[in-house]
Amino acid sequence: MLQHNPALRRAESSHLKHAPMVLSAPQRTVVADSIRLTCDDLDWSLLALIVRGNHVHLVIAAPDTPEKVMHALKSSATRRLREQQLVARETRPWSRHESTKYLWKPHQVEGACRYVAESQGEDIGGQL
Image (cartoon, rainbow, N blue to C red; front, side, top):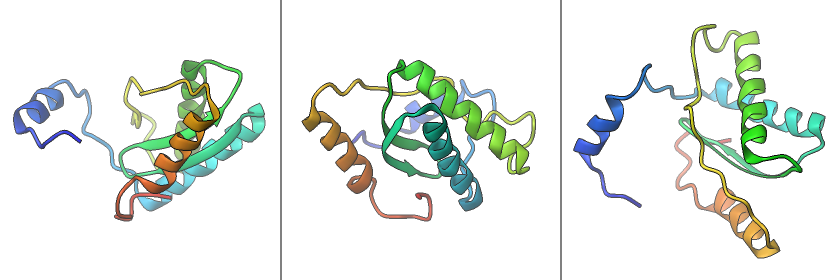
């Protein structure tokens, strides 16, 4: 874990086009449900999922690239949030980039699933 660095935070914040968004409990529920539905629709295996107030962790087995998976998940979640009027039409709830990893071996998948399920810290009302 990185130590708190106010200068780095200011520098990163200066690049934001919009104020950071923190997902409410209803928004987190919609995002989680959307991810599950998208995985079902596209026949992807959702192995682990946690939706926090300001980010999502998940492990998916899919025959597509991480970029295609992320685009599909972000698009469907945004659409459902807008349909339920939980975000305004002009709101962009997701950052432009995401962190992705290929997991080639069973122990890597198991470790990633364990990390998602057990290593997110205390539930601060920001996870599902």
